[in-house]
Amino acid sequence: MYDILLTYISQRSVTPITAEQAVLIRDAFKPKKLRKKQYLLQEGDVCKYLSFMVKGAMRQYSIDEKGNEHIVRFGIEQWWMADRESFEMQTPSRYNIDAWEETELLQISRSSYLSLRDAVPAVMEMTQELDKRGSIAAQKRIQAVISYTAEERYLDLLKTHPYFLQRFPQHMIASYLGISAETLSRIRKQALSK
Amino acid sequence: MYDILLTYISQRSVTPITAEQAVLIRDAFKPKKLRKKQYLLQEGDVCKYLSFMVKGAMRQYSIDEKGNEHIVRFGIEQWWMADRESFEMQTPSRYNIDAWEETELLQISRSSYLSLRDAVPAVMEMTQELDKRGSIAAQKRIQAVISYTAEERYLDLLKTHPYFLQRFPQHMIASYLGISAETLSRIRKQALSK
DNA sequence: TAATCTTCTTGATAAATGTCAAGCCCTTTT
DNA sequence: AAAAGGGCTTGACATTTATCAAGAAGATTA
Image (cartoon, rainbow over all chains, first blue to last red):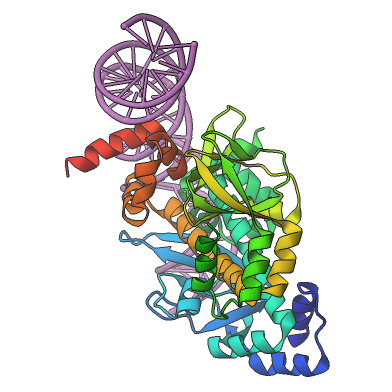
């Protein structure tokens, strides 16, 4: 299962990974399995690990005063899961992260991560690439939310991340889009007749 | 005016800047002034420069089919302006960036930026720090848009970036919040009476 | 100074979306 | 097999927000 991670890193960096570095990487990451509905992180906890998803499906969400869940992010195979802010600053998280499907992870602690980044240039490069992509993607999503109607946002998600729609229930997709489950149901019905 | 930039970089990095490196930085950035309403970037253009704001106020926005502006980001002194995606990938931008106040910038081209980053560790560190903060901030804003009402988002902006409200007209603030100018006007009226 | 433009506000109305409640279907649990 | 729960849909209704139109106050331009 480490092969997936190694491949992932080398595909996202310029500097090749040496055999010695590969060992360092293997040693730094520990495997972890999560059952359905099991938490990776709960609100109030400090996010101690950065987790690479080998298999499964997860979601990151907050809960408001009324008890409603608001999904901020989905994750599936080959995505990283963590509350970035909590992980970087070591502050309590305002989010929950849990497994929607049986999930297999490779986890690294913050301190190991910092040393690994210094020891392996490819890891550093990958990280930067991820941050860059992350902020670009977030920017796009912000633009979508302030500019588009619920229907347009749904159609866009259908185009850009169709696998989300197949793996997560509709009420979660609705939450991710920032609309109610009923509204999404009606939008889908309407979109069919077009 | 370069002092502001040098101070900015050293405050956001660990490695100190040597005298030689300071010269490299000065040489890499060229000053540029923009009048009110002047474009830094227009939709369809490739974003050629990364611009550090020494003075002034700018906005980044898209325009939809109906001709409505949607403000994605504001910038004032000591902020960086650029369409990250267009700058990184050298693809045509979907955004406009223009000056709302008289603005003074320090600009660096992509190629100079890449070499400077390699030559000056502090610049590299600053960049990473910015990306990290950028994606954390964007994440928060996404959460706000999907979880909060228009009024809550306004009050949050009032708390976190009060200077925006003083320097940009309300209809732009409304656009940034993803609501109409009329709605913002009504929200403000209501908030006063509380 | 007069004319024009921009910003902000307000009212009336329309459209979008949320909320609540009920029911159906399917899966899981007992 | 029965019971329970989750997911999805639908209807009725409430709330939020957008849209259109008009006007006042101030700034900018001719």
